Length: 600
Image (tube, rainbow, N blue to C red; front, side):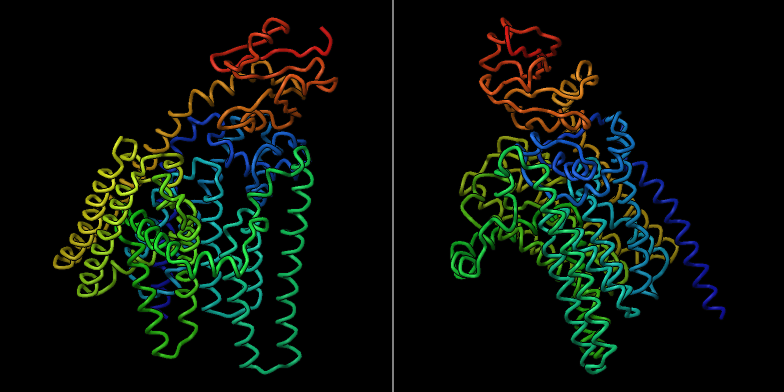
């Protein structure tokens, strides 16, 4: 009884400490929110808000039809922010960002729950460190400030991992149902979550088979299995298939749905024949895939102190021990997160397993598409380095350094051999290792990060191993100090890199938002010609309740646009003709606003 009370008291203290830490992390994770006026990267960020417009019945069809398909599921949440804050889009942006940070810090408590369930004897300091630091990787922090799907997907990955851990501790059918419903919802947010959906369904299928084998094919067991299958199938058909069809029909009607095709997974033409012929049994593809795999390892370990790698080691030994002890339920959490992380990485590896990978620096380690999966594995890695024996830590660290050096040197060699210098989305793709790439020599930058990453792996391991020779109090102080430095560096890099990203686009965003001086009072206006890299999505985001017409030439104007304001970028070839014929209502350094008249 006393032991139970002591455990409850310890857990209460841990929760209080985590609440304090979450408040501190919330503050440092939202430092840049006040600087935001609007979205920055229109195509992707605007794509996440399109689902909200569909749910609210807003007519964004002409603008959306010029943008790609990015999923609609996030719109179920973002619709709330347009509904209540849409008439002040700056405030709406801030509130939605704060919500992303809130989702981010809530993962601390899911991590704590998982650790306490699968490592019940872990000491309080190690538990708190692993729970809090595991959510602070640079990519996790960086995406708090951007409306990419990574933030909510990371939260959902944590949530599914927590459900799987809970299921392994006490099997209940409703937990499997909830797991599948979350996986379907994640799939509607972004199609890359087909891996989450596939693994959840496979896991559920295996559990049903095991249950039927153990309990026999009885009416009750069959009813449970069928109920689970029917619930999942209905939710998939309603929340994904029906909703996706309705979304595309409503918002991609103006352009004949042309912009949807290339982005839809179902339209990419994957078949068993092409996968076997062009991927699995293609030596050239496999060679590039191996290069990409080393590139992802290089990206993942450059700043995470090899915690991800250590998490893989922990999973391997836990699965091995559970199989040896014939305790199948103990395998579940490690097999689930290990399989999901591996498949997520391989999807990115094979997505760019073609000659196009040699055209852009970041494609060999495009971490954005899989980094949202890393946090639970990083958590396991932190637990491993804080609790494992010295001998295993030494071996694991040496292996991690060797693998990382090989990954870095391979990346350097490939970039140099193919003279890959072109940059495109590196800031978004690989936060944490992108800054030095903004030089004229990415090969030297790769060597720099390889050396830096090696130090970043060795130093924490050496300090933590040395601390074990000290007195208990000093040992814990060195543990806390080491991870405080790591967390501070990660937070500092993420904030600095977002500041760089914001500074690079601040003028564009500010000048576009300045158009509100004249557009805020109009429910309908025209965007004339494309708006360069960002299209007209930023205009639509700043005016969520307005109907925006898209015209690409003066010949497209007709009576529908008569007497409407028109927004155009300066420097277009029709500018002189427009200035002579029409009244200019407003202008800034980038745009001019004029009023179209059908008859002059």
